[in-house]
Length: 202
Image (cartoon, rainbow, N blue to C red; front, side):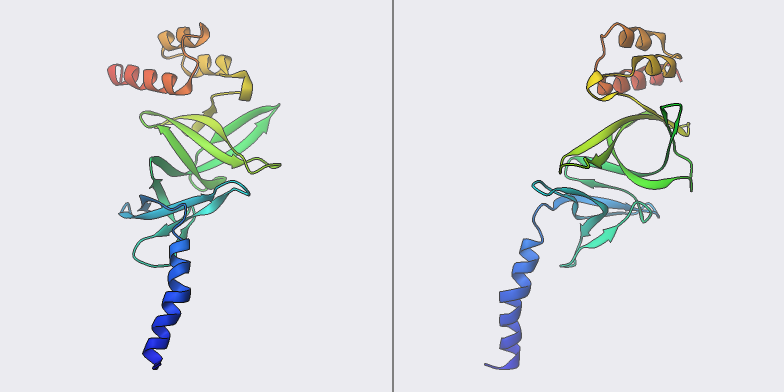
């Protein structure tokens, strides 16, 4: 067997299976670079259960066999399958047991936030790993496009933070009424209603 044949056999028996195995859990999508270029490929941002974990850097494959890794500092966002993520500066603080979130360039850390509803008001999921299991939880956050602050929408199993939301949406009394009277119980309903209202009341 000559050297060319030997190398071909090594590729088939070793390299090719590794590349096929490496495709597991990758989904079609794209990344958006900091220069606002969109590059299509296949992505993976977490290891599924059991022993699941969220990756701090998204794995991206385009034409190469091996993946490149991108942190929130390196790209503006990405889409994986049906899920869209944006890279945002987020600083989290606590004051008298009240959580405060702000998004100001170079303050805090840049993180990937999952976009649930996009609009003047964007509804995000800030995903994180449970410390005692491989389950992924998320914080529900609202952010207006012209404001630096984010507001936490829910309080775990207790549902909406109605008092905070009523104050946040005081410019839209109709929405406040629906929240306080439990007509709206889901953040998606709230975000969609407010964006429609805002379009008619710029």
